[in-house]
Structures are given as structure tokens and as C-alpha cells.
Image (cartoon, rainbow, N blue to C red; front, side):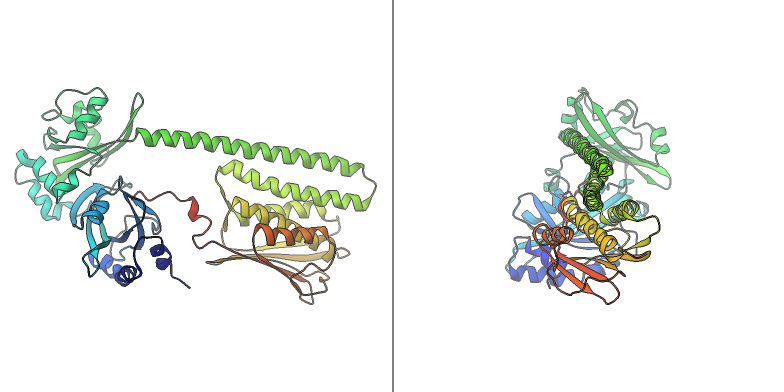
Length: 488
């Protein structure tokens, strides 16, 4: 069975020999992470240009990690990590580059190319370290206070170890000294400031003049020396990050980063609109299904045939199971479902509608805290579970006063397992084929084979019936397809 690393390496453009080099190096990145007290990653090239794939990650056990969850298998985009793409394309190292993480933590990133015996760059080794608490002790910070008059040049040398990296930066960069006077501003910052109506020279100005006093000393102090804001100027959206550098509790300067996020905000707006429309569609489908269920229930009450009433009740339960799925999607507006929660609702609905007053049937759900499935798979499985529970109630406990049904849900790396087990009268045979004419079991057989591409097995346990369903899960997992490209 291929390892997770093998799966992700297969998505890269590496040859088998180069992939083996990466596999060997990946064995030691945990040691690197512990020794350097940094988050360590290995990124490899893929066919998409200006993009790299994260194939390995290690968080330090000797220090706090910058990340709350794994990013292995996600994409590193050039616009978010220019140093990584620069190292991949040039074969050069980028050491000591500084920035601010998404958690508003001062971060230092070093990128080293990984090369094969022929000298070709086949990946990058990336180390990211939280330096917010250590910034006063570093050699680079000592350079900052050699002279406040040359603070901008010193900060620039620390932020970029090689001049080529500057050309890859998408942000406007403004550096200021202990007096909060701008000592350096790159061309991009001039472009962005001009677009929002600030056309006078930036260099030499006090930073308090920018963005309506946002960078006042009082505001820096109130926010612990770090300001992070999204600002709107007409149709233009800017993300502004400012970090004040301190030594011995005295401010010695700082850096302001300005990024144009207008396009990103517009895409977010479109996504929000689409999400609202999708949620409304699910809500209307759920309401329509409930209306149909109510009409069938009225018709059932007019019927004098017990057999016809049973058919109506089974159909109503099928409709209600699908309605529960759409109700869940209408609330959360996502395409992935907690299947354990859905099964619990379905079980309660069926028991309340089908049990005779004197009957007592208990249903137990044996599953992990949450089992997330795509909406398509969850809908098919919901109908399968509905039919199997109905079958147990009608045929397994037809004349009995009490009973127990256990629903077991297990998700393995490449397989999903669902079992419905009861202590009823038993099905009377073992095998993979339905041996009688029950419509419900025929529905189960069709859904498992055609919708899930899975297998079905019936077993008479001697004291009840056990139905086992298995179906394959894609290697990437159903949720992985919903993840966004990496933006570390």
C-alpha cells in the first residue's frame, strides 16, 4: 500500500529517482524541526506554473508551531510564497526572510533548494520560525539600533537576503524609524497609495498621516505593537499590516506591508452570493419534500388497507430521509455532511412513525465523533440506512414487543463500512444477493452497487440479522476535494 508521501509525490513532476531522494530526506525533517525549533516543510514542483505542492511537514516538539493543522497535499501559490517559487526556479537559497503570519505573528522563513546528483532542483526545504518573543536577542535586531538614521536600509537587508526577492514581492513596503517617520518606501507602495488618492511623497512623512491616523503611537500600543486591518477605498480593498520593532521596551522603528486584495474580496463576494443561492435551493427542496410527505400522510389516513398504509409509510420515510439531508445542507451551506448526525435524525424519525404503541425498539449508533461524507454519498447511504431500519422494524420485530438495532459506521483509509445489526427473527440466509421480493432490499441492493460501487452482504446471526455494506473511498478522501489551495 503506498504511503501518504508516495501519493503526493505521484502528483509532482519528479522522476522515480528524484522522488526517492525526497522520500529519504523526509525521514529526517522531524529532527530538523526539533533542532531548529521551526516548522519544516518540503515542497515539490507540479505541472502548474508558479505553484508548488507540499509533500511533507513537521512541527517542532521543542517549540510552539505556527500552524494549527497539517497543510500536506495542498498547493503553495507564488503570490503567497514568492521565496519558495524563487528557490525552485533559480536553485538559490533565501535565508532570513521576515514576514507576518496569518495569526499575526512575526515570522522568519528560510528556503533551501533540494538538488539531485545532476544538480537539478527537485524541491525546497522550508523552515518557518516564530521570532516574536526572540526578536530582541537576534543578531539582526542588534543591527537595527546601530543608527536610527539608517534603519530603513538595515530592515531591508534583514527582510531580503538577496536583491532578486524584492522583485517578487507583491506588497507595498514602507519602513519607518523610532520617530515614526518613513525612511523607505518601495515602488509598489507608491502605486497603491496613489490609487487611493495619497499622491504626495511618502518618504519623510509621519506614518500618522496615513489611513486617518491608523498608525498612531496610541494605536500601536493598544494593539501590542501590531496592526492588521482590511480597508476599503471605493472599489479598492487593501490589506494593511504594520509591525513595530522594540528593543528593551523602546520602539526603534517598524515595517508596514500593503497588499491589494480587491480581486480577492470580489471573488469572496461572488462565493458568498453563490453560497446563499445554494442554501436557498436546498431549503426549497426540503420544503417541497416535506409538502409531498404531508400529502402522502393525508392520503394514507384515508386508506382502509393496512398493506397500502405500510407502503405509504415506507415512502414517507424515504422522502423524509432525503429532506433531512437538504435541511442539513440548507443550514450549513456546505457540500460535506456529518453522516453520524444524519443517521441519528433518520433513526428517530423512523422509530417515531413506525412503532406500535406497545413496542420498544432501541437504536444505537456506533461511530466516531464525526464521519464526514460528500452530499452525494450521504444521500445514497441515508436511503440505504432508512430501508434497513424499516426492514428490521417491519420484518425483524413484526410481532415482538422489544428489540435492539445497532448501526456501526467506520471509515478507513480506503474503505467505508456500514453495518445494520438487529436481534430480530433473522433473515434466514447468508449471502450477497437479496433472496426475497422486498422492495426495500432491492432498493438497497441497487443503491450500493450503482451509486456507491460497493458490496452488500446479508448474514443470519442466529439471533438476528447483520447487513454489511462496504464501498471504496477515493485515495484523496472525499473532503480533500473541498480544500482550498495553500496560503501559508
